[in-house]
Length: 442
Ligand SMILES: Nc1ncnc2c1ncn2[C@@H]1O[C@H](COP(=O)(O)OP(=O)(O)OP(=O)(O)O)[C@@H](O)[C@H]1O
Image: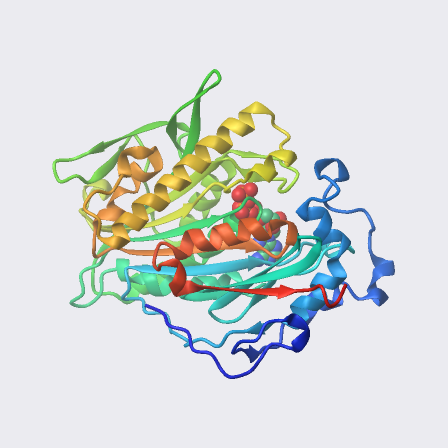
């Protein structure tokens, strides 16, 4: 459980808030973007198309008053918190990652950076118009680890490694299953992060097992879960084998309740280059579609299963000792995103199915974390396939919520951070909200 302590430092008088906070140096890059000396270099075309938003919409307000909101962020004072180190013995580890602005976004003169991070807090600054007055809401989330805009895939892998290494046989410690989930809005960097960590893993795992005294072999399978549709109706999702041209795969539960994929190809990986080739192969076949937000938006959940098997003459006869699962979830999409759809009704059906399975996944993980006896895993194909991760008390799971620093995505970023945080804590344990009234400035 987390607790928060506050230092006796007050908000500036103009903010109208008097409470205990500590001053924090915020990312200067965000301010530089909106200073007038830089403006001439930028493209004045707004990222949000005018037709997509009414004159008083949040997006328009944020772009019109970007300089005011940006100033309010520069005065933001971060609450002081007890810093916790990641405890990988925890069953769940919850992290956040912020995608930096793309080159195109950096050129927009009406954008400001609405996210501030520290090692384990992330604050989303939401500018709004309330009763004809501007106000800035600062929502601070305290998670196990935050990867800021400058964090590399290596930085992410170094934390993920602490969790997944527990799936490799070590002296006197039986290996446990581990799962890495990437969750976030479309275009926030899930696929990029999964690519990075799986590549690092491929380099790393063979070094680790070389040093181990155990004789093990590593197998890989890759499937994607795509929305099933019958005409206008969204039906049960399908599992497709990415190593077999997307052919359908079925899963069965054995007498112990363990889930097995019937028909999914598993390849033996003898070195990192081989494993990387399989990872790239799966990635290339995965279903993607161009949207206005992401030219290669994933339209399915991609899952890599890495099987750690006892060495045997026939590879697939080797007993499975443990399993590492990397799950690149399809992008969570809000109502606002439908404005950017290029694919018409099919995209809406995909999105319905994706959002349904993501909601079901959160229900299952929360029930599992709470120790609830009934875990509603039968709701969707995704949760049925990942069933073991909710039931096995020894298994380790790391959740990484990805967000963007765009003001137009602020609400969705909050939803993402709440989604991942609620897996482990109650709202009061990881969120602090402050409101800064900006009427004095106007
Ligand atoms: N940390 C980062 N640094 C630089 N660029 C990034 C970072 N994260 C993401 N990007 C860029 O943002 C774009 C979208 O990333 P990506 O495809 O990984 O998003 P996604 O969340 O998987 O999207 P979707 O859910 O639509 O598939 C890509 O061009 C990617 O290179």
